[in-house]
Amino acid sequence: MKRITIAAALALCFAMPAVQAADPPAPTIAPAKCEPKPEYPGKLALQSENRVKSFRKELDTYKDCINAYLAERKVAVKANEDAANATIAEYNAVMKKINEAQAASKDE
Image (cartoon, rainbow, N blue to C red; front, side, top):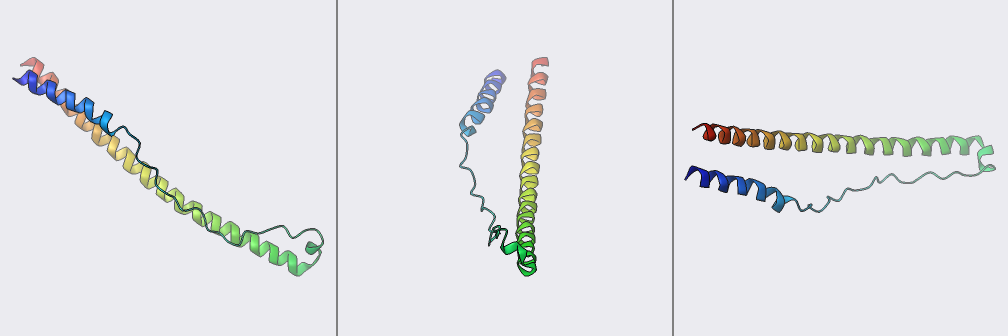
């Protein structure tokens, strides 16, 4: 009876990953919305000091927006990585427990 139960448990353990192996749809990640994107004004426009200052300000604003977006994405990546690692640790703990139970039942 124990062997049948163990065999059934093993069959379920190996069948579950196969069922869950299908990739879920990828989440939609909003792209950075850093507008307006700066455009190089050309040589003649850069001869004006006001235009140079304006262009530099546009570049700095755009760069700050991009950096803020990237910082936000890095936080999300870290959270996803932590969740994945926790799931792996949980799976490994369950499998270790099952393996120990199997080894103990062989000794009986």
